[in-house]
Amino acid sequence: MDQTTYEIQYNEGYTVRMISGNESMEPLDFDKAAFQAVLADIVLRAKEEPASVQATEDLWQWACTELGLALQRTIMAEDGVSDPLDTLIHTAFRVKSMKAAEDAEQEEREEREEPISPVYLLEHLLSYIHQDDQIESVMYVARMNDGTITSGWTDLAYTEAIGLLEIGKLQVVKEMWSEWEPGNKENE
Image 1 (spheres, one colour):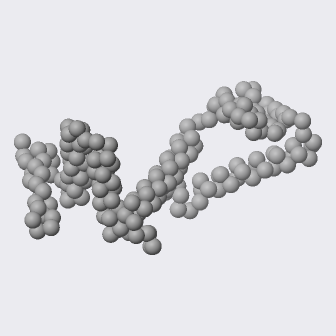
Image 2: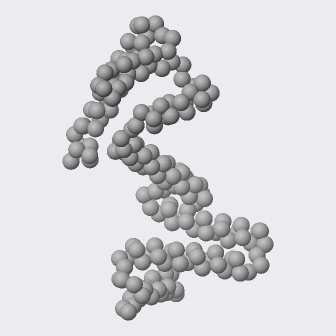
Image 3: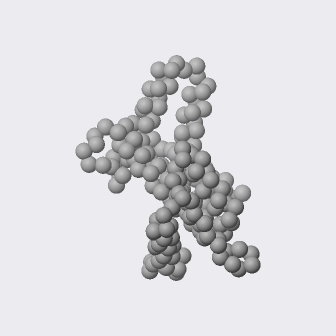
C-alpha cells in the first residue's frame, strides 16, 4: 500500500504531518482531512478529561473564535464586523440560507421531474384545507379516463370562477416559460 505524507508548516515552529494510506490527495482535500482530524482529536481529548462546563465552554469559544478569525481573512468577511464570533455567526447564517435555497431548488426540480398524480395533488390541497382553513375557494378542471373534461367549483360567482381559471392559466404559462428560458440548465 502506498503512503503519502503531507505537511503543514505553521508559525515557523510547528509542523503538522499526516500520512495517507489511500490515494494521494489534492492540497485542499488534505487540509480538509487534517482539519477534521484535529477537530476529532480535540473532541476526544475533551471527552477523556473530566472537564468542567466552564472548561468545555472555554475550549469551544476558542475554537469558534479561531474559525471567525480565519473567516475574517476571506471573502466571507463582512465590512464593519470586528468580533470573530459575529463573523462566524453571519457566515453560518449565510451558508445555511444558501443551503436552504439550494435544497428548495432541488426539491422543486425533483417535483417537476416526478409525475404528479391526481391523488398526490388532492392530498396536497387537502393538507392546506385542514391547516387553519387556508383555502377559501377551490376550482378544478379534470380529464377523465375516457377523455371527457369536467370542472367544478365551490360557492363562487361565475366571474370569480372565470378569474380563477384565468389566473391558473397565467401561472401555468409562467411556469412553462421559466422552464424554456434561455440559460435554463435543463434546456442545455
